[in-house]
Image 1: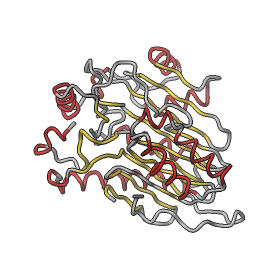
Image 2: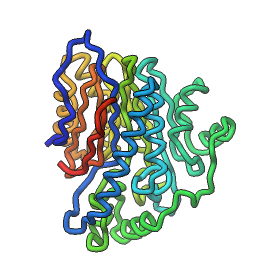
Image 3: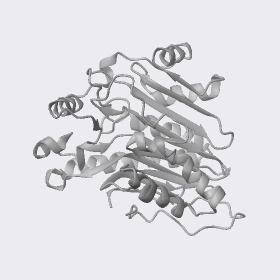
Length: 337
């Protein structure tokens, strides 16, 4: 079942210049209604609305889609409610390894970093990689060296620590499992006040946007999976899996079972279905999220904006932190179906 947000608009003639628009997500997963705190839900919705609004302000001032998604994801990284930047989940060894990717639909240029532990905002470094390096992706120590050389803000490893994530790791170890960020309070739902089960949610964050010039961009960032092995890389920094943008088709940011999103090249598949099969955005995203991912037991969702300004936010899990806003309109945000 797709998101119940009325995000998708009627397909427009190519000659129509669509209004600038931004969409964001903060992860998807299972719902623990019995443990839900109204106050915690309010905080999530407030954060989503504020971040969508920030992107709208950039677009309204004539800013680029690239600038809008960069700032939206940076703000998501700064918010401990989400699994990116501060508040990122922990590896089996109790460390943090973060991934991020950004793509410019106008040029098809992209930049990514993976397995970084001292870069405050991985999305900003990913953009530096895109703009100031002949390469697309840096990992680990090489990524951090690149970040320092290009003036990125570096932090001590404990900057990303939160007690909630430490407790989540302890539960994952106790169950001898690897958990997808929003996947470990199921073992202790009675003490959780996260609207989505804190141990059964996929904690990637992301943003996609279309600007007034008709350019698309996408950005994605994550702390990965609770109790993951050091060195594990998911779909987030992989072009075509966790992030993709092309002015010819669509901008996409994914959140979910990373290994399945990689195996299906999920984000690019949406673009391919639009370009080669002539599908609408709704048809393409539903095909990938509701059929192809499900066939491989993949859970999660994605946010997507096509070149005509249509917006879709489908997910096959029980909920997904999400929001979108066109310039001149109030943001629409939601968690559940």
